Image (cartoon, rainbow, N blue to C red):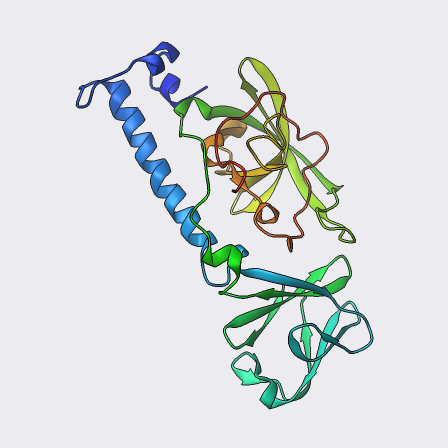
Length: 283
């Protein structure tokens, strides 16, 4: 059910070509919805364009258990799957936690990546499936400096639909866009809803703070949109009520860079209706 219908506005009202300044509830609601979406979209683009954000990735290096050099980086690098070991001299300009790496340093990643600065670059020590990789984040990456924004469908309140969450915890092996990377998701349950009169269901995972994270495919993939997209919802309300605003469906990092390790959507997460809302495939 769209936001307009919940406010008592018929679907037919969406077809009205209202002139500027018309004092109607339909016009006011749609204007407010569009303004909110544009603000959200601008923030989304600004986050992507941050100096060391997803658009800054320029390299991905797997680490082996024997120390070895990495293209474009000083020092020797290795990993036993638990600890990353780096050997460098102070003159190499590798800095961790504000101090130069001089000699041999070890980095553990129990809950997420560790970071090393190298000039204006940031080196991400990323744990992936029992291994470690080094990803280089460079503010001068062409993908960042040439970025002009993310194309998107025009916002439409009809794509904000009501759903129902049902808890069904499970651990799912889903794979990854990158060969050699295994990914698993902790599913919280499923969200059921209707699109264009057709029943749909998506497996939902944990987005933190009670929110739901939905990876999904739909018939627009490979045409006007990337191979899959993501949508985050607010925490479900009483009885599992949740709103899915597909106007805020966004691309995964792997749509912008060749150095992503994005998990794939769970097998059932394939919608039968073309979702002409949210972000389009990056240019």
